[in-house]
Image (cartoon, rainbow, N blue to C red):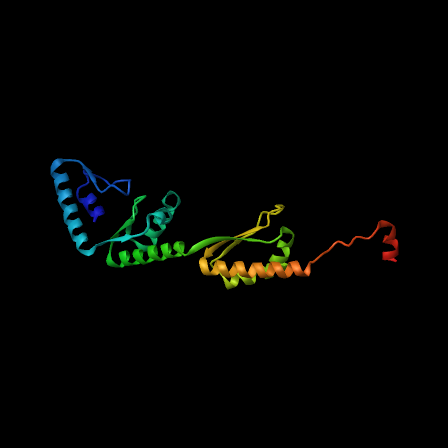
Length: 212
């Protein structure tokens, strides 16, 4: 490995690329030792190639940025969890996988499962008067907890405290979002029915007669 080469050829400086897209290794030192290290690295690379696998998977270009993540955060997670080298150029539909057969197979499965999850997601809005939001949530959150437990993929976001907005935002699996929307709509209608109010006009001069 590289540590043994450095010990054997201590005068040779071996620099690996910082950019993951680069492939060249820089060698500096006495010519004869540089030649020996270069040949050793080529032999090592040839041996590794025999055990490595390369595969390209296709993903709709609109999902590539999701696979990459903010500042490359998600693709780094895929690399760490699978051990495969993964390259996903922006705007492309092809994702390149390199590594051991096990690592490539795992990376392919994880990425395609993630894309499927994103593809099946949708966002919806349920409108319930803001005055009823506390009742929708329930005492100690019991109402909304039961809805969330039945539909774990759905993120339910109420307006910020103090907001007059009636909109409750739902995001998650399509089928579960539809289920949550129906549940919240039914709950909102039930609360509205239980909180029915109506103004009755009575002349002020008669108010004392009504209250007596």
